[in-house]
Length: 164
Length: 392
Image 1 (cartoon, rainbow over the protein chains, first blue to last red):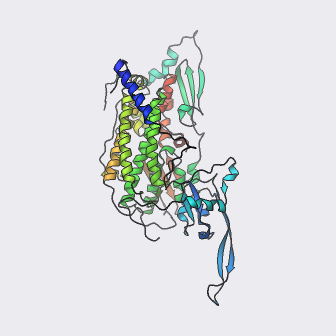
Image 2 (cartoon, rainbow over the protein chains, first blue to last red):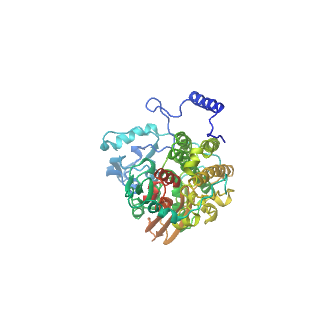
Image 3 (cartoon, chains in turn cyan, purple):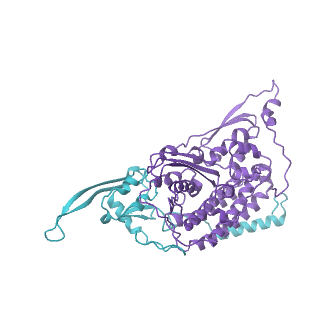
């Protein structure tokens, strides 16, 4: 345990040694806009929407803790698959907005989605000067799909998930 | 337990209360000055306002004004479902959010009569201890800042980032993990996490040695903290002070060991550190030892991590049967408890949150009487409260 009460010359020299070594070590911090550290693949950065999977079932919007997902959809009739069958009714997604000004990044919407239409992406660079621009519509949310990572392999002893 | 010799300090509340009056004669009476510390003050870790009545440099009376960050989580919880509430309670004590989730989820599980599988319990324990390390590590650095030492503050932030990276790679969130689900966990650990955790724990242990070298043996640090802000054990317990603050006053009470068994703690071998002095130095010392103990616990947990599922069988829509439950756990800041009343719906009827910082701060008016102004900052720093935890 060093005593700081009597500054002796060897203490000063060893102290300068620490200074010198620290100087050679380089900085821990990263100069952000010039170099960036990638967050972990699991990081909850932004929610991406795979539009063709969405059936406008509203489960995500209902389970959101602060109701920041806005969904509108309508039903359309499509010709039957087989001759003489009944026409199919298909859900068409008109509007899917997430207000990132309100979002708490809890991930409940991604989890409850029964059709795998929502994913987490670790992208985080979408700050906006105006708060209204934080409302991402379905095209903007679809663009985030490029950054969605593959599911990671799990640690030893983990049970591989079967079909839900 | 005393690690080093301490001056014999007798606490006499009467002495403190009369200090201001006894030394001033009528002609030289200067009158009291009222000083507002906060609500925006760097030493209050948030928006705590402390109204201090000063006689010269001595504090005659101190009155903490809280509520600037009241967000009404107890009321909000009544209008949310159980899975949604874990998102909210992440934000009560934002430094140790994972540890906050555990008692709530545990309470809901008890009401539903399900139990998380062993692997989930162990991973929960690991992450709780990691959040304990992250929380206390910031304290170990900041406490240096309170007495004027800048270096430890940077160490605290630097090495805490390693722990937060671990939490992020496992849960997805640095500060708000939201990883607990009723009946288990959201996901298993990613590949390579255990090895990374072990190397980080080595670094944390080395960091603890650095803190001990720089601060615990330092004369300035000792002069600023020894014998200052003494909480007598019984009085602290009467005020509801808990956690390391109470253990530093010589009361050997830790819910991980003495409370109702929860998580994997009954199977762990750990020591509860206490200190007999009850001053700011003792609180620092106890937390330093607790960090080391937490590292030891994490390593034990990593060694014995059982294999298996991480989620019990839970219905898709969670409805909790009628009943009431009180769950308390030992959080980094002290005793954290939830009283959950359920009427059989998807959300609770009423949630009462007992947070550690609220009770820890309630001793401030007593504790600050008669101390000097610079010591106010040291005492508040050594009590270590989080404003979100006070106001909820």
